[in-house]
Structure formats: structure tokens, C-alpha cells
Image (cartoon, rainbow, N blue to C red):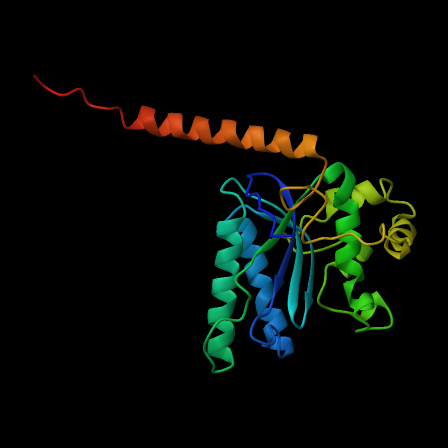
Length: 233
């Protein structure tokens, strides 16, 4: 089966997986990991794309993102380009770090938002990097567990969906993170027959229709700003 089409829709939620290419590591040192954090802040402040959860592994980056008004592709490509340039300069090397593909899977938030958080936070255990999640420093798990985080991480509304009351919030989150997602979830290709989306066809059709309306409205504003001049006789 060929690669499914991606959807780049403003305001939609995405599971993002970025992988290293050419057998190169994305992160060689703690300095590399730490240098990536400002780029997540830039996603929010420059591109208005909001990170809800994140995890950095040595050869891959996993994010849960709400796309900004320009969609997601521009923001993700900018993130990859900036990190590659900084990493190459810091490690005295050249060339690309990432595969060319951006695995950005649209998700239906009512069904897949919380499973995506759990999947992302469980990755260090799944890869046998640590015996317990609390000692892995390169994810947003501790931000959720301690109910605090940087201003570019939109953790609070998502945590409230897991544990609406502050009393017992930690225990509820710990129980949530220990539970298991449905088996055999394809986070990259999704469940939709045509598009990379973990979503029902009805939901995909709805967000595509809204995106079409947004683009039409944007085009109309451009035409109003630059009216066509009638030719002079």
C-alpha cells in the first residue's frame, strides 16, 4: 500500500513523529536534548502551534501538537531546519539529520487526544530506556505528574481531562499512565483509508470542509485588499 496523504489543517490536533536519517543520532548529548527545548517554545510564540505533550528519544522526536493558523507543515519544517543547523554547528558536522518525511497524523481529539499523551509518555519504558518514567528527563511526563511546566507547554487543559479535581490528581494521572492503549495502533498511518488520520471519516470530512471555508475567506480578504483595476478606455 502506498503512503497515505497528509492533512495540513489549521487548528487541528496532530501526533507528530520525526525520525533521524542516514543512521545519524538526533541527540548525542544532554546539551543536544536541552537545546531542543527553545524550539518548542518557538513553535508556540512564532508559529502559534501549541505543544501538549513531547518525548525525545535518541533517534526520534514525538509530539502532540495543536496546529496554528498557518497549519503545521511550515512550523515543523522550521523546527527541523533550525535544530539541524544548530546541531551541526555544535557537533562540527554537516548534512541532514532527519528523514524527509514529516509523520504528522491528524487525530480526532475526543477519541485520541488522551491516548496520544499516554503513548508519548510511555515511550521511554517501551524502549527500555529507564525502569520508571519519573527518572526520564526528556519528556513532559513529569510536567503532568507534578502539574507544572514551561509556558509553551499546554499541559493544564489536557491534565484536567484526565483528573478534573485537584484532590487526588497525582494518583489519577499515575493510574492513567499505567493503563494500556488499544493494541496495534498505527500512530503514523492512522485508521483512515485515504489520509494519515486517527479519526472517523465523518470527522475528517468536517475538518477538511472547515479548512476549505477558511482558505476561501482568506482569499476573499486578499481580493478585497487588492481590488482589480478596471482597464481605462
